[in-house]
Length: 232
Image (tube, rainbow, N blue to C red; front, side):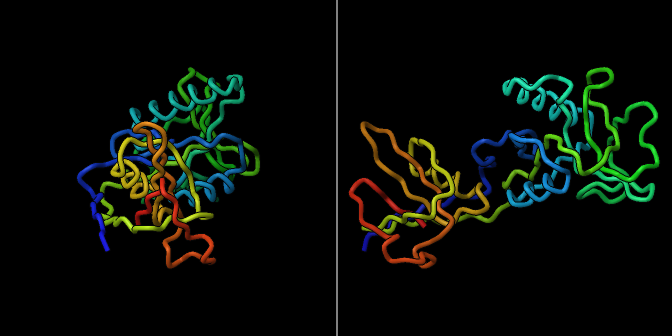
């Protein structure tokens, strides 16, 4: 049996497709508004947390990209309110992943007040994204942040002949080479394997799977397709 191996590891830091890379983190904006706890749960399912800006430059980056993101969705400025990973309880501010007070704060005048609630950013004053405590059970947009996965252990992928895995798709997109698909699988926390489809000309389609051949629930999920190459 012929096996082709290649390694994807920490020599190249990448963000999953659809995420924005900045310094040592990856960011993504939620397409719909939601409650604070829903936003944090959604980020958690992605292997991330609600963003907590730890400097003015990071804060300005997030707010600028968020404003552009909502502008592309044709969202009016007064609705541009963004949850961050901080909440106030009994007068104590806690932020996700922060021990003690956050390294950076950008409060509106008169904030934070004594009410319990969660922290959101908006452009109500000075158009630079001021912070305010508000009720956690109202809908706001959200941004997730996770560390660039450059510290993840290297992953070894092997080509499995005469096999392709179906019905376990996470996402798919075009790539130029198998290494590009391997990088994407390495950067995606849920990815366990991938299919590489050869298309017309030199184009290829990468499909990330959330299972390996051993995880397949049904033997009919495993097929032999002439234009499909499976790696795990």
